[in-house]
Length: 506
Image 1 (tube, rainbow, N blue to C red):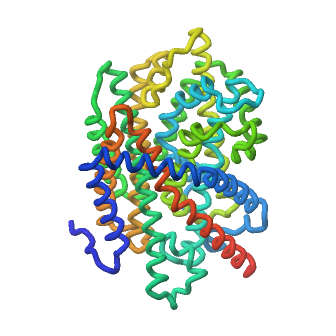
Image 2 (image 1 turned 60 degrees about the vertical axis):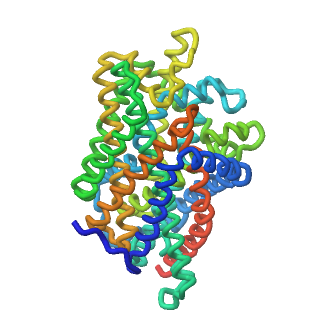
Image 3 (image 1 turned 180 degrees about the vertical axis):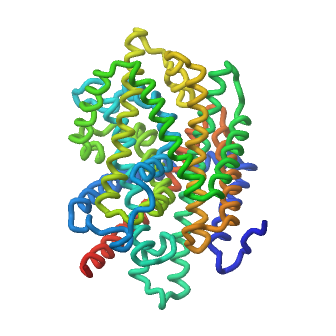
């Protein structure tokens, strides 16, 4: 197979591949120095831009809700006669698998328990409800708002302006295609390079975390002590499966695996739910949901009693917002790709609310069940502290634990495959001149580079004895998401102008 030639026509591919390969060299050969550099820069970003992440997240949620109830909500992605390419169930399954995936398994037990044992806020509600409420906050509307913004921005350019898939095409309202000069062309190229790099960093972070959890599960199942080289092997395996799926396309590969993931995930959820205190789970789900909605704005601004402190915000909220931002370009573009024929209102409601509510119920079932285990034990000795093994320790308290834990490992692999194959497909669109069905050559290239870079992230996570992959990606993503978050403000402004223009022509 011949790979694309590096020329002016695909300079975007040349630039991004070059940057990623250079950074990979530092990850492989200067791992400790690279880690120390990242650590120092991440502290600077936290001190000066941490609050900006919070304001941006809240602003995106409120903006989308405003659009959904406004006249603009009737605008359709595509021509008036266009119909959706996928059923609603297939659509939800694909967007959820691409947008969250393995993360809900990684944090299912560990995060609610951490919040219960270390309440971030003192607002007078019970520790159990507070733990669930804050978990909802970090996995809820804000994350999906970032995804939705990018989906609608790209969808507008793709289906209304008939432009190739590229974030830089958002700026076409300001820069007339016929009058682009050297400076404007390079400005647009920088925008696309920035989006691609942020996407890669977010994706490989997820792969590194997911592979580390699989290793934790294998250690738990076989009572072994496998080292990080097993994680590297898992990363290569996941990369290979993802490439095969991406080469098969959206219909054959990505859709089928995404739908299968949802069935297995719902099955695991039901398995735990029916063996737990159903009444208490439902009660706490609605109580925590009510608190989350009522207190969403002050939590989003971290003001007064709703400020958990800088250290907590850095370890949790800033990191999560940076993670969601890093995933927003490729997830948003993928959502736009599968959302043709739906109105903005339907997309906002579907993407912003339905997956959020699904995540909330998931965390309530696992979190509340873990709370009951701890109450039954009479004391908590850190059984669920390890983010990579907590769900396996939790499931050993249920029947058929070997089979169920094996299923979780397979589900982790499958979720990671759907995330990576979606990213390969979207990155291929970017670098194949916006082609909605990128050539197999571009998919091959991105499958290889993502695997190489993911291995580098694993090495970075083990640069110091006291660190792990989670620590490394927390610091890295807070840095790499900053330029994109600043760019997003400009993108939103131009997008609103274009929406108003489209509606005015009706």
